[in-house]
Image (cartoon, rainbow, N blue to C red; front, side, top):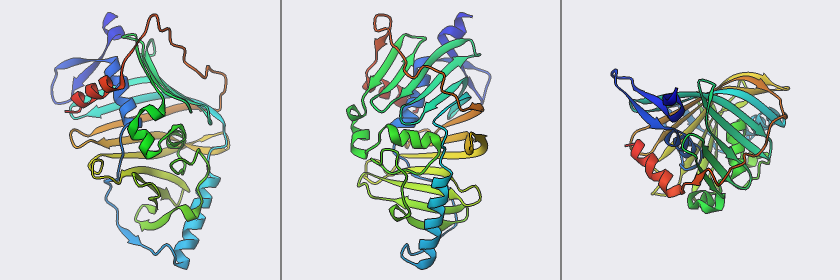
Length: 305
């Protein structure tokens, strides 16, 4: 019993040996995947560029953006069960938990072992990012402006919200719906690609599913030489009904830092439009110690080697 309380077992898929990974490493790795990398797509597609000013391009672009915006979730709050799997090289770990979100207010991911032991949580609000490691009694809490990368790129709570809710967005857009004029259009074998390069730091690329009229993949590509080798790809599939709209029950996040690739798969079930839960996580600072962001970054980089 003590083993489950203190550690998550990490199995080497190429042998029978096992080793233990601290829960704070696990939680912080997921935090890194979500908030601290720029990304570009490495998916091979057959594309045909169409001049954004041509009548055909304008008509198609206007229509797909309009349809995706129409399919944006109108449910303001949701909860679901969650299975999170992380893979990095031969390292693999799976853990259960829950995902809870309220529009323009909070995103919460709670993780537990065997549904019995609370390992910790990640909480994003418009004001801060919070990761709580309940096993080791540690936490990280930072404002977006404290993270230089996020500040420069214009990544805030509303960008994360759109990623989790599967919708089109713009940097510094504060969650508003983009219009067709915000994108250039490229036809690809999988649908229509919408590109925005308004930011000098990062480009946004959305792959639109023209059958579902949903975003099937979101990419944020670094435009600076220091970030071009780092990539993140957020994919959506297996849609289920939430309220009157569709919501993806599978989200796959692929990240490449130039070292070992890291993959996170979020499998959601039991989706509900539910508002009856605590919107903020309280930290007892007498029992929990704060860990610096630099310490976390160092740990994650060691895990990725």
